[in-house]
Length: 589
Image (cartoon, rainbow, N blue to C red):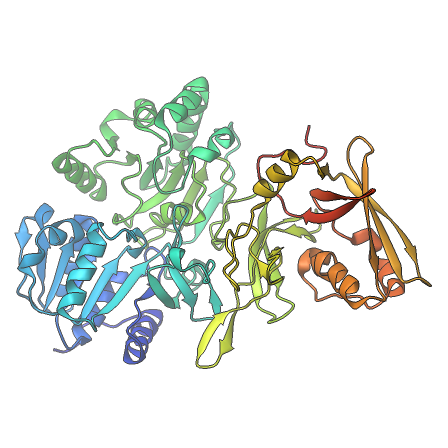
């Protein structure tokens, strides 16, 4: 067959990266392309080039239909296997299927496939009983060498983390040492930033409008939000109904700002919220779509919106993926999320190019505070004023992106990273850099472990977590726990000693002395304190007390100090840094 369409440069690069990867490896791979980048054409070209049979999965019929249409537009033919589209053809070389339909009819597919493509692959569950895993296992049994490719715009979920383990730019995602939490996809082999798409004119520029009216305050509900699933509807409704004027004022501003716009998508928090918003919009030009909207009615409303018979489309968690209406030039976000990925996915609904469209107005009424082009960090925001900061690893020099806090001039005050994400060469493979910015030491082998680890990654001995250590110490008669509010020091240059006096809120103290003439004591100080200086962003160690003196004001303070009675004095046995458990830290009353 001849190719009857021309790929954009980045689409061709994506195709080539897939071919190159599968020539060498059988590991499942993922490519990350922003919403509107044309994943359908990449899928079409890969399906055209594949030597064997191809199955392309999607989770909604709209994506199945869209991918199939783009493929046939290239001059090739393919089958559709989707109950929602009333077609179940399984004999074509290339088949576009919904995962729901194919997983319920795997017996219809008894011929091996060479390529299994999964669109919106961040939806793959790691549970063996899931529809995706059952389907993947079926095709692996038919062909153990089947190539599995995922495509997504958002390769991260707050519920499960990153969907791949390694990135082709040379860094890892998550803790690769934790096999139980290993992502399904081994590697991201191609990624195109959203900012590049906008700069090159492939997407409409977003205009983030700072709405000068009251916002919703969802901060009290952050623990119930996971970014992809609905938060507690009751709690959300109660909060929204407390401030009825906010919804009316927000809707009136949306009407005003969209007066000369073509299409407006509004993302509501709950079904009740959606209907309240709809009550303030022109009835004859507004549609409301929720998870309870019948499929046929939903299809009719979407079609009317695409044909511009309707101007306002209000929805609740149903149109964040698989929806394509290029004329949309206003996105109003009235629902909370902790996921930068979901935020960017929502914004992406309005970034496709369309005739007469100059830009897309982004109205965020939730105080999400996200930058449209901000990278996903991989952890929840630890504080409300956290921003993305770049921290270089002192061992491999990889530039990590962590949450952190900065001052008014942009200087980094602190960061919340725990382990370097860089990949380093280890023989014939690449492994995650071992450097840890925050750590706890194994009492058995002295290796550094993640602060939340329950088992040592080196010797596999059980590790007590901080809460267990505090609980055990509090329950023992000959143990003392000091809630550390700070410490003072006394030193002797001639004697090469440093005495640290830990203080609690009530003036109680514990002391310990480090003797720098003794190698073991000197090493203990460097491991406990020097390694943590400057948030562990520098490799620092001290050979004597004199060179340590300029750094004394910057030594990190532990949150808790545990001591054990040793005859007539208390001997410090543990210092707990970076504590995140339920026990109150000093000065938190």
